[in-house]
Image 1 (cartoon, rainbow, N blue to C red):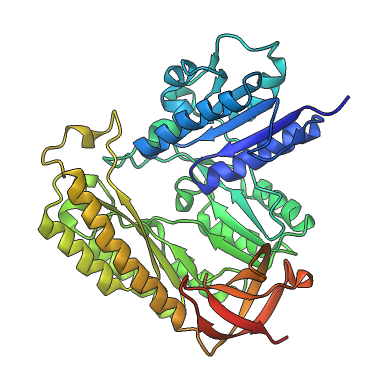
Image 2 (tube, rainbow, N blue to C red):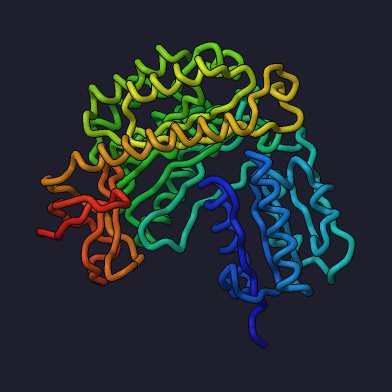
Length: 432
């Protein structure tokens, strides 16, 4: 008898990606065959996101598409949208089971217990129940793994539902995370991305610190590169910056959300820093690591954002001169304080502001990448081939392409960088 087929559909963040990968390993260990997202399957698992209304809509559309394609397949939905609106999801044709983030680790067992399709079962989606920690790391990518070190958030920003969807900040002990990193190394992956909901807040459960974690992971043999997926500016301490600058394993790559360059809007958002503090953190990174890649999250169109506020944000970001901007139009989420705030920004105005920042981002990113022309860099190459090229990233996250050579996959190679193309990829040649 052929193994039953299962596929996974992951929406949203790197944390979801690590969790889906761990769930997939449970199914494979149970004798299932994991198939492509486009293939026919007996079980379809959706790990959902709810950071915006668009994310919710994307999940609903995906459920309907999967049900049309696989009318007899069991459809299981978990993740943040499932946590926040489980009964809304349960009403969609084809859904068999909805599991909270707290019960995500039980998904495999719940699915195999199903006798067949019927009314959707909803499992404990109350925010008060969000106390468990689902240990997870990704596998399958030959080069890079995502290691979940923290979950939940205590911050309660005015626009955000994450603290409802993920619960309070919590984490695994460092010793357990080191064991998971050792498993990743044993599988041959060279790079780990350290991920969480509020990654830098690590230690709430165990009394350890994020810096303690970085030091412990630094000693894992076989892992040659670490990246921190994202860290709040108020948690990016001088000690963390100094450690990353001194360690050959921790890459000069930081993703730091600001959300607005206007102190007025930051106050309305209930963020925990000012623009002056943010600028101070960027300056501290650059003093220690002048070549650092700095990516910044920004939301435009938050209630009360005037044209002057937006211009202040634009000028602040241009002055900070990051390598990349991740730009999001404000999305009103039910149950958040932002819903009742006055002076809503018209969608057309928000769209225009997004476009302005995207143009700025394109220039900033190209300038950052072009600075490396003529340099030699260490590049970790991935397995993807496109148009005869293979791709990889420098330590500070410039993407490089060279003619495809299968023997170089998952290898760190020294590359001479010659030019930049229209996609901001650097073209080089391997010289070692």
